Amino acid sequence: MITTDSNKYLYSLRDLSAVSHTANVIENEIDRVMSAVGPKKFAAVVSDNASAIANARKRISEKHPHVLNIRCTVHFINLITKDILGIFSFFNNFI
Image (cartoon, rainbow, N blue to C red):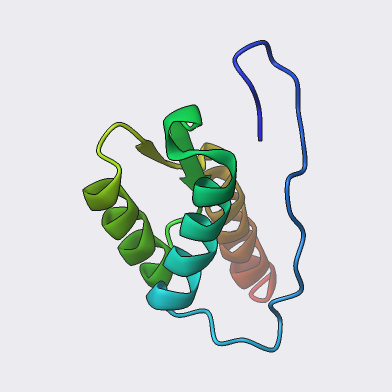
């Protein structure tokens, strides 16, 4: 979490590696944290754009219209970089 005065906090850390990352599971986790902290204290939820996460973000937006849903720009840059490097790797096989 980043507060309005730019302080950073880790509110909760849970190992969900054994749980299926469906939209319902992700939505419930986001909702759990928002409920514990207070939904009015949130301005945005930032995540990548996997389909389950996109669906969870949409549901959170419906419940909390004041909370912005922001796709992580760094994640997009990472995906683009991987694609570019993959193209170079592809062409290096022909050289």
